Image 1 (cartoon, rainbow over the protein chains, first blue to last red):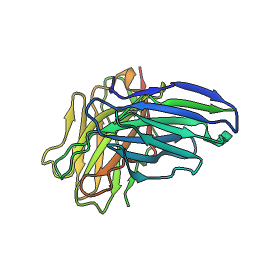
Image 2 (image 1 turned 90 degrees about the horizontal axis):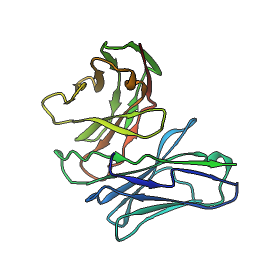
Image 3 (image 1 turned 180 degrees about the vertical axis):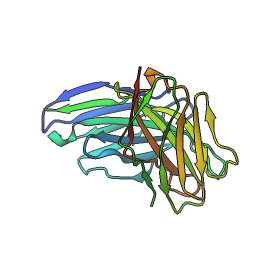
Image 4 (image 1 turned 90 degrees about the vertical axis):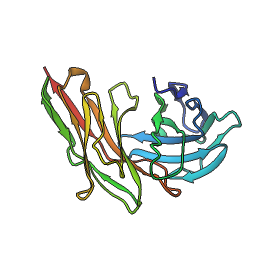
Length: 117
Length: 116
């Protein structure tokens, strides 16, 4: 158990709908990452939050948005869903220390399987 | 920009034998970390081992060891005494440790099959 909790584990929804994926990071971790894994694109970085603030943005579509709340949990909102959004969505967290000797291991949750039909 | 290359789409190994999964990387970051993750068919992403670019010794975690050759920019994963439960997809990844480039960049993965 990595300590990162994601809900729901599985989700089936129709095209055009909106879903919210939830993530609770490991205790003490300030940084949360969202990744999308699909068969054709592999693992794609979407976005990173650090202590409530957006820190880095990757290949995140405008239809997608995320936020990190004061209690450090994060939500990924996916709207106007398309068939191609079907994927495994991972949340990950890390302590995020600074410096060359920081280990900064990133631990992943079990993922949320999204199927758009 | 960071890049991870895993040239072996699939590997086969006999149970109890050792196997090496290849990983080469490219980065302009002065300080970076290298990671290996295991993804079984159930989908979760399991952290296996970490190597910092300034670490003098190769990392080991139980049956996993990382053969780090900085000059060659390689970070191969060695699994000793393979078990049937090692059958999974294995991803090599890296991230910068100084500055703002903290996200993990992944390779495409290697599918390892352990035969009885």
